Image (tube, rainbow, N blue to C red; front, top):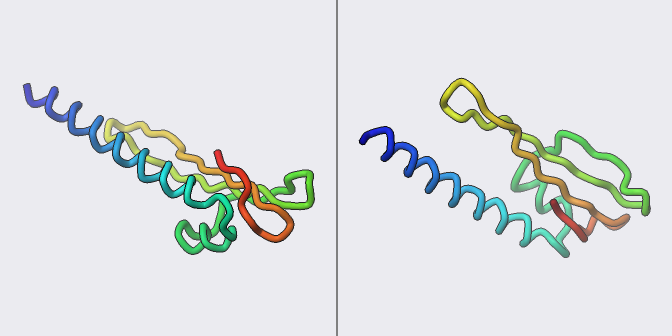
Length: 88
């Protein structure tokens, strides 16, 4: 019975965690990439977007608690003025 409670708790935490990340990324459209950098720190990678702007990618290792985990990734595309026009 305790293991079922832990699974339910984990699912609830992951659901709310993902929704807050989604809110952060949606709020970024139309803002300066520096706003996201202020919130998330420096990106893991920056590359050209092929249109004169840049693609910024943040990555973070998220442990699952069972000796494994996954890499959380968030990517923003910013135009040549540093304004975000897309996220994934």
